[in-house]
Picture 1 (tube, helix red, strand yellow):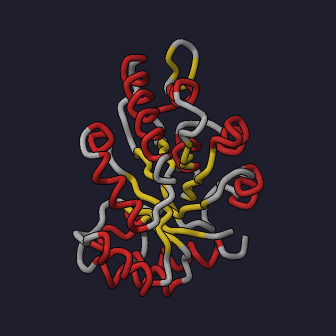
Picture 2 (spheres, one colour):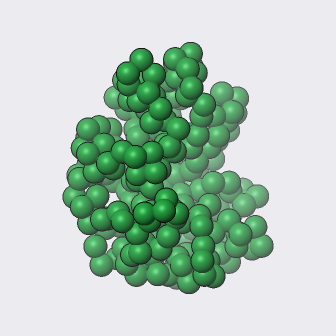
Length: 238
């Protein structure tokens, strides 16, 4: 399992010192990072930082507004730093109109990004598992987007919504190219990777088409770096 880290997990640390935090991620043993902001660095500076840290860029989470206005600049930046994906991390999908708009935006972006060797996708939370016309909003989005628009499934939020992450991963098969590894307990809290109810070994087996497993951790009952180290130690043995 080639484990990457969503840098939002250490947002409290990157806000203090972006470069040293990224370097520490590499020192722990992660192979890649997924951005949620670029720390104010130019593309050239980011490339150098990744090189010094022994890391590669899986990709980035870029808001819907970036996809709607500013996608060219974001695409250029991510091409320069070697990203493989540009993922929309959240959007309102309460109505068919909102889902159709999101699908159109992602389809258009995917066609453009493909010319640069980059894929576009969507990352779920729990609200996409509200049903519209008898179907989950996320299913409707997947049906309305082209085959090359990938799904980055966050297993924490799938479980939070009361859906079986393993079965849902299997449902969408080849569309699932990224998995957000994030642990949940029986009280729906985000806990260390080894302390919750999700079996990441079975999740890995179900996600047979996934190219990247990205750790995300947002709630802490201990110092951030201790939790991230615990997560890595647990996952590297899977």
